[in-house]
Amino acid sequence: MRSTATAKANGTPGESRHASVSSLGSGWVGAFLDRMLGRGSHAVTVPPMDGPLRPNSLLDQAGGIVRIEAPDNLTLSGDQLVFSSGPEVLALDPATGALRQMGRMEGEVCAMTALANGAALAAISGGGLRTFGDAAVSAGLLADAERRVIRCPTALLAGSDGRLLVAEGARDRLPSQWRADLLCGKPTGALWMLDRWDAPARPLASGLAWPSGIAWHRDGSIVVSEAWAHRLVRIDGQGRRSVLLGDLPGYPSRISPAADGGWWLCLFAPRSQLVEFVLREREYCERMMAQIPERYWVAPALASGRDFREPMQGGGIKSMGRLKPWAPTRSYGLVCKLDADFQPLWSAHSRADGRRHGVTSVAELGGCLYVGCQGSDEIVSMNLQAQQ
Image 1 (cartoon, rainbow, N blue to C red):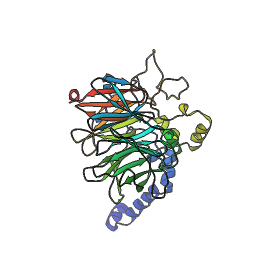
Image 2: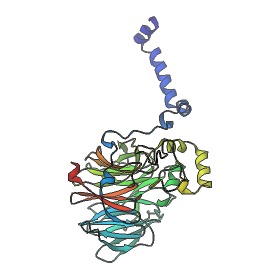
Image 3: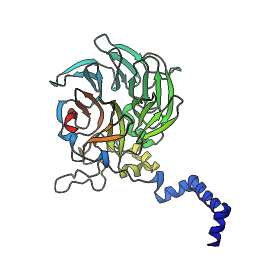
Image 4: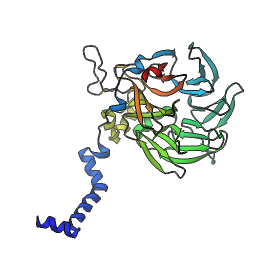
């Protein structure tokens, strides 16, 4: 009792002990203890889906519009719905499900955005840029001032003033190599701005963990989804970053505007304890990538359950011929509605026993939300009035 009172009176011994513990916890000793005890950044737990992210089957209950291989980059160009499928860019008539080809590129289309003049702009794997619409197709190259080609564009966003934002997933990879980038654990993504779509790109931020979605915040800053960091970050004009929404239970992808001033966030795959554990075992990751075909890696997927050789986490085994909805899975379908401050309001899911997984892009038009499900190779439509 006497020592405690003395410490409180003098304010030194107790404070010094506390300071020494804090310094240990924040230094290499603390990091070592976290690694040994499996806590902090070394924990393999994943956040639960609860509250606004409570699981449901809304995506599986939605009506199918059209079946097409790997639909992606759903975009509103004027009053029409445009999307990509591999190298093709197509326009969809939501009323009839009719498709019209708008262009065929020389490589896979990996990002799209609508321009102020009513045309659309597509980024091609490897760094190409193409504009298309009613007029002739124009070509360009996505590169910085030093003529380094940005080969891995993952998202585009055009401003009303002609500026163009580009998310680069990783410096030395292609968009199709996203699993390898996750397993390597070295974030090399970046955010770029072009004063015009055919101008050189200048850097806004670097060291991002596979940025794959971009949006304008109402205060003029930029919001970016970092897939491998499981979060949305805001980047201001000075390059300062702040987390808007963190520790998500999945890997966030594209961010699309909602008609009410909010946003739609796609999460293309779920986090799992198995993957979180493997990511901390560097030697295992390196040997796995060197010796095993990519489709069998212990990594997230846009679709799963199609091959008995796929990796499986305990609890993901069929029981009585049925896979439980809550079973751990490599793929999942998830779209989250956000408010104007990028906070979740509600969500639509396709769970482990569903098939509409791998949602990478959505677009809202006429009171309906059109969802591109790469896991089931289709575009589905949700009536938003029924969700109110």
